[in-house]
Length: 320
Image (cartoon, rainbow, N blue to C red; front, side, top):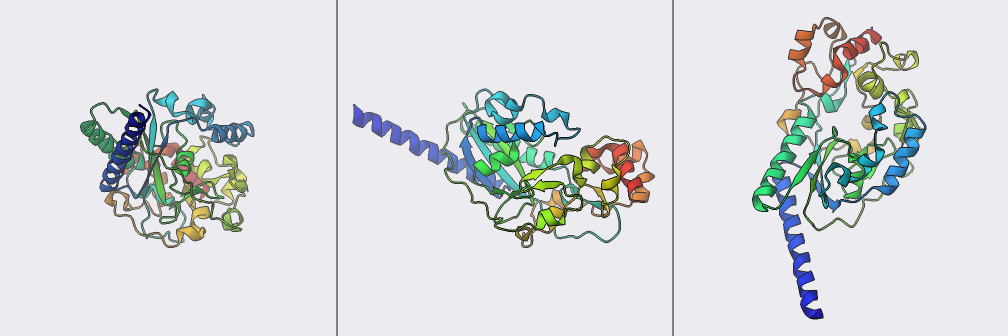
């Protein structure tokens, strides 16, 4: 009887490994560069760090982060049947560079909205899984859903959390989008994390013009240029931040631009991430001339919609 049970357990483990490898292969076929699978369980340590960060008020106006932190750290609060989390990373790096003119746009927003690109790929992956294993059910998470994307990427062995708080991968630096697929399947799980390889480097902390990285691995959003130009709904940008924008209209890549791990990233092969015209450096004058109609047409399916027309024009005024 013991031997029979042991063989059954071994067969079950082999099947989990087989299914996991098939899912990873399909994810790569869909264009994801890195894939890891971990058990769907509460992120206890990460939850505690989030609570501490929130208690310091570092979330600023992002009050939605305060709502049910447990849901953010427990995948079964999002999808009660979740047993596994498939975590993916998609390289978005393109080799274009900003000009010296004001109006710089963060690299992640140069092309089509990553929520749609990553989401489309994950939904296609889920559809394939459901066809292969009819009992399978899942939920796609791409930033909008209250999941701790960076924590899951670290758990799944895709990279480590850099001192600038972005996930760094060995192959693609931090120029990656992260997404998750929660599944009701038992799979083979990653059992090794990538060691922190920031070493003694403090380039990201030293380069931040507003000192938003208040200590390694901790960002005070209220001081961050990306937060000020994207998330904040204040009618005008804080004077101290406005004096240190260094030409940024939407977002900021300074801490990533100086990171040694981001100097050799290969270009993405995802055509939808190629820069749209006027999205590497946007003209503040043109932004100020936008109407609701021309704004909607220009930024259709662009991540830059996040700032809304009022926000973009506020940012443009700060650069004049």
